[in-house]
Length: 208
Image 1 (cartoon, rainbow, N blue to C red):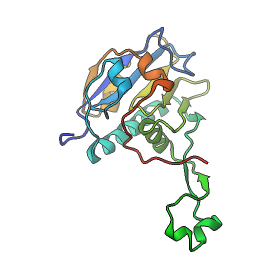
Image 2: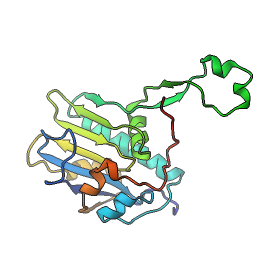
Image 3: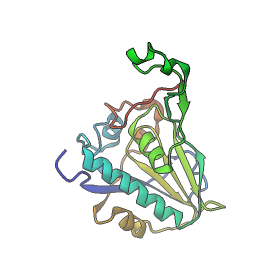
Image 4: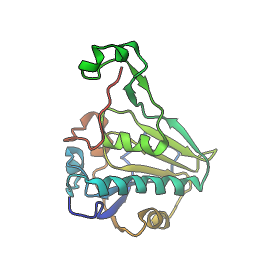
């Protein structure tokens, strides 16, 4: 990837028949994603082809974009996590890891679930397919929702207010990056069962 990490921020309005799970109450739904992204068959099938391998700058800027997005949505209400990403790590307190044999073998012993901060949950599910999904509501009743899943570097964002202009929101989360509208075949990115991402930039974790 050329120096500079993320080159621009793409976005598009998601309209029927495309449907984001859990967004039935939303009157306005958009997708937001960076360019480039890791080579991905679903993005390609959807009509997006700006691919490159993510470097450290890209990963830092992607995390910053997620953080700004959450901060902007939190202006509408307190976030309530309705679906949390499942993340497991080796349990160093288990007897297996205290044995002499364990020190000679790969870490394949018992696992424990780790509850990640919300930003890290979104990083995890957008970076690798075998995590679960994240769904967050902002406000009660919800004024906005955010979903991330499927190992795609894309954020699905919905607002319950009708006729909402997303441009001011996009300008704030882009933080100086070019903001470019695009229309993709959203169904290709919403079908979790069809995901065939080449590889993840996020470290894999095993499940129990």
